Amino acid sequence: MSTTSFESSVKQIPYSQQTVYGKLSDLNNLSKVRDRLPADKAGSLSFDADSMSIEVPMAGKIKMVIIERDEPKTIKFESQGSPVPFLFWIQLLPTGDAACKMRLTLHADLNPFIKGMVQKQLQEGIEKAADMLAMLPYDD
Image 1 (cartoon, rainbow, N blue to C red):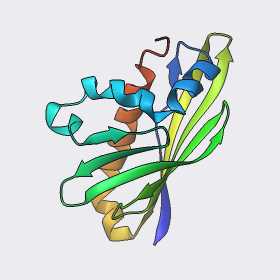
Image 2 (cartoon, rainbow, N blue to C red; image 1 turned 180 degrees about the vertical axis):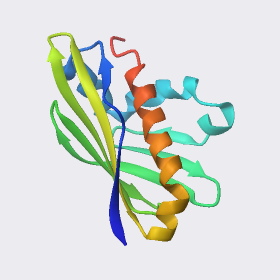
Image 3 (cartoon, one colour; image 1 turned 120 degrees about the vertical axis):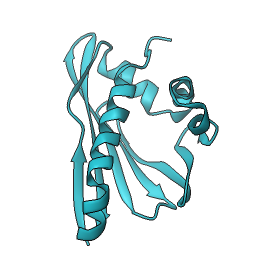
Image 4 (spheres, helix red, strand yellow; image 1 turned 120 degrees about the horizontal axis):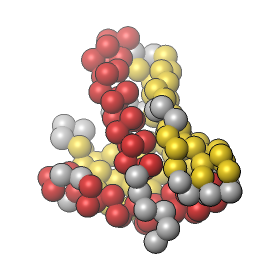
């Protein structure tokens, strides 16, 4: 097993670093994401302030729990119940008083066989997650 990292491209967000951090560091605020998901996926998604859970076919319930908050720069998550253990980071950097940039990083323990099967899907998934987070309305 070796740790494999996947990074999203850098996303520009037209809100301050503090505003974006404030929204993303309390996962209750992500309930708005449900509207952007297909109906069959939205029903299996649940949130509280420190974690988010989703039912995944063949894997069951996977939970991501916030394990570290470094205001206003980083939010780190750890998986629970995932067949593949992983860490997930949201990194924020200011680009001015009213804007910031964001990058998502996923660190997963993958053996070479599994890596070959899931590498493309994980890279696409982290990119889609970054796109979705970049489009959230952070001012409500």
